[in-house]
Image 1 (cartoon, rainbow, N blue to C red):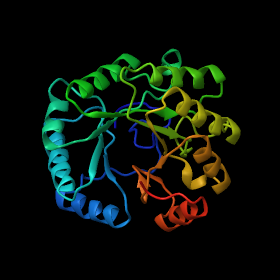
Image 2 (cartoon, helix red, strand yellow):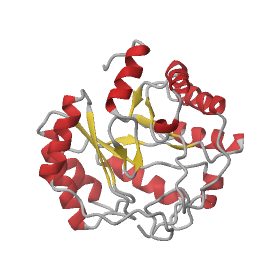
Image 3 (tube, rainbow, N blue to C red):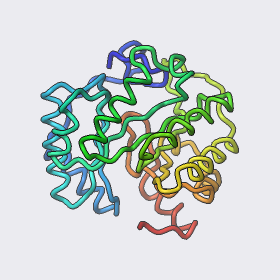
Image 4 (cartoon, rainbow, N blue to C red):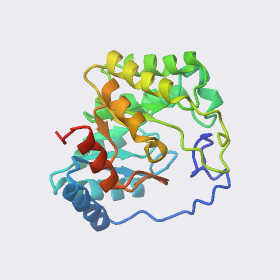
Length: 261
C-alpha cells in the first residue's frame, strides 16, 4: 500500500515483514463466512489495505459480498477511498456496511497520515451514505497521548450526520518497523473512559472493541463492556494483526454473562 499511515504494517514505506498476498476468491470468502456463521457471528468483514479500489478490485469484492450474503450474514468492507459510483456498485452487490475510520482529530491528522487528508475521509463517507450503505467509522485512541486529541476524535465521529451505525474503538498494536513503534501506551483507564465517551455521545451506535484485544487483559475488556461497548470483532485476524482465539472470547463472554444478540 502506498499510503504512509504511521500505524500500518502494510504500508510499502515501512519494513515490517508483511508480504503481499493476492485476494482470496469468492468461494474462499464464502467458506470463511461459513466458519463465522458456525461461530455465531452476525457479520463478515472483508478488508484490504488499498489507497482506493481499482475496478478489478471492486468486482472481486462484489463477488465475495454476494457469496457471503447468500449465507444470511451481514457484510462489511474496508477498501480505502472510494471514487464516484464505486459505493453504488458495492450497494448493488448487497454490501451492508463500509468501514472507513477518521483515525484522529482533524487538527492532528497530519501527524498520522500525510498522503491523504481528513477531507478525503469525509468525502468517502459521504459517498457511502448517498449509496445507502451503513457506516462503520472509528479510530485509535492509543496514539492520542493528549486528551484534546482523544476528545477531538470523539467529537468528529459524534458530529457526523447521521452518526455512524458502527464505531470501532482500536487500541494501537505496535508493529516493528512502523513510525508508531515504541509510542507511549495509553493507560487502560483512559481507554475505558474513551469507550464510555463514545457510548454517551453516540447512544444509538454499536460500539465495537476492535484492534488490540489480543494483548488486552480480560479485566480491562470487562470494564469496556460495562462502560458501553456492545460488540467485538471476532475471528483469527484483523487484516494482519492477531485477534483473540474464538474459544477465548467465548469463555470471556460466558464469564461476563453476555450472550450474542
